[in-house]
Length: 216
Image (cartoon, rainbow, N blue to C red; front, side, top):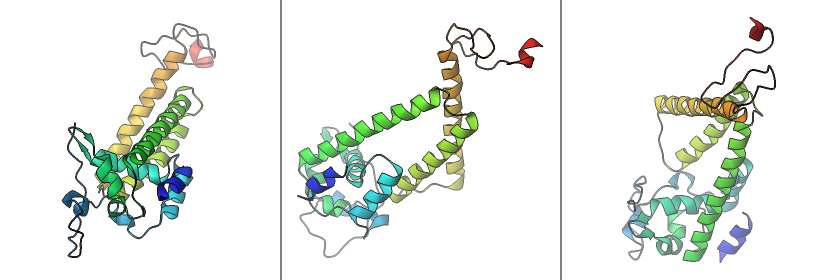
């Protein structure tokens, strides 16, 4: 199976995707929801290698892991994820996947995606909390990250208006500012600030004057 080579590179209703135009020559044995699934239609004709190269340059995940995570979210029922359906119809569901997968291979790819998200999330949050970046640098970093995430959403068929994009960016920036401010207090919980000797608490006090300002 192609899954081996690609692996080396690396209770809700199904989420609706953009409806695919009906194909008169469609295989009648293919389930209707599979025939109508068009989440990856914007990259129809792309190869696995091209999709994988794009992702590996910007994220930790492979194209295989991305596709499986998306499919597992979209084909989730009250009884669980339809991994057999996903694996058997993979070439119909994702343009750049050319072979079928076993349910075990689908689950393995999704688990790999989950693990990488956890590690990347921990790395990013640690960097944000440990004062490695100024507020401006963190804003720039968040902008770059958000742009990549938005592009992947657009590839999946999500259409965002300019107002929606701006609102999302502002909400993300606001959350990250709170993370940075709260972590500053956490790092100095009931101890004195190493810069000016001011006593810090974790009750939300994060801003105080340093140097000459502290003497006023």
